[in-house]
Length: 207
Image (cartoon, rainbow, N blue to C red):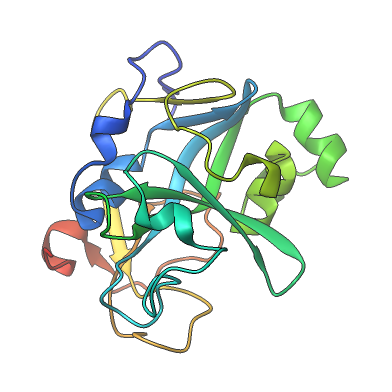
C-alpha cells in the first residue's frame, strides 16, 4: 500500500459507534497519528464484552471503565506489567467492546520512532501492540482521550484494501474466534497470518 491517506477525512467518534466486528476490519488501511507520529494500521484485533478474552467480560473496574463509556475513546492498559497497549472503544455506551491496535506501517516521524524504540529497522518499529505504543509515546496518561481530537488523528483509508482474518494472538480464552484482521501481504504485521487465513467477510460473525 503506497497511499497513506494523510489528506483524507478524519474519522469521528461516530465511526466507532458500530459493531466492533465492523469497525476492526474497516480500520485496516487508515492512518493513525499521535502528535503527528504514526502510520498505516495494518493489524488489529476485536474484543467483545460477551467473550472471556475481553477485559470487560467480568464487568467494569477502575482499569477498564472507559470501555463502558461512549464509543470513540482511547483505552490504554499495561500488558504483562511491561508494555502499554492502545485500544479504540466501539459500539454503544455500556457495550464495553474495543479494537486493539496490533501493528502499523510507519509513515510519519520515523526518525522519532527509531529514537524512541532504539531500533533502526522500519519493519520492527511498530510490529506489535507494545511496540506501537512505545514508538508513538502512548501511555496511561493518554487513557480516555477522544479519538477525533488532538493529539490523536485517524485519517480514513483512501480505498478498501484486501484484508485477511484469523485467530487472535497471545490469549488463552476464546482462542477459536477469527477476530484478528490484517492487511494482506504486509511485511509490517506482528505475526504472519496462516496461509489458509480467510477474508474478513467470511470469517466474522455479527454481534
